Figure 1 (cartoon, rainbow, N blue to C red):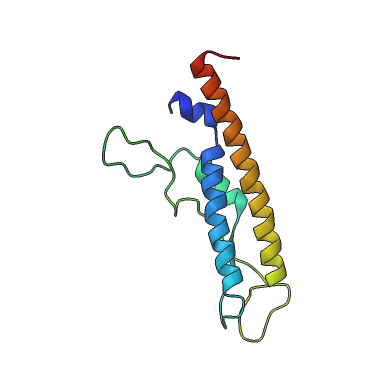
Figure 2 (cartoon, helix red, strand yellow; figure 1 turned 120 degrees about the vertical axis):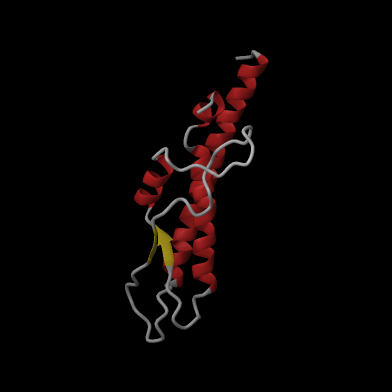
Length: 130
C-alpha cells in the first residue's frame, strides 16, 4: 500500500461500492413492473468485509498499474425479502427501493466530500502549505 492509498483510506472503495449499489437499486426500480423480477441489494457488512480483507486485488497487466477492486468483488449481493409479496412474483417495492436509492445517494455524496477533503489535504502537503 503506497502513501496515497493510506491517505485516502477506504473512501475510494466506498465510492466504488456506492456507485455499484446505485446501479443495482436503479435496476430494481426500473423492473418494478416486470413479472417475476427479484429485487436485489447488498449486505453492507459482507461487502465491507470483502473490500477491507486485503485479499481483493484488481488484475494488472503492467507492474506500474495500481491495484483496486473489481466491479464484482464486493460480494454480499442478495435478494431482498418483500414485506408485501405480489402475485406475479415480483419482489420490488418501489417505495423501499426509492428510499434506499436516496439514502445511497446521500452516502455517495458524503464519500465524495471526504475524498475531496483528503485530496485537498494532500495537495496542500505537496505544495508545502498549511
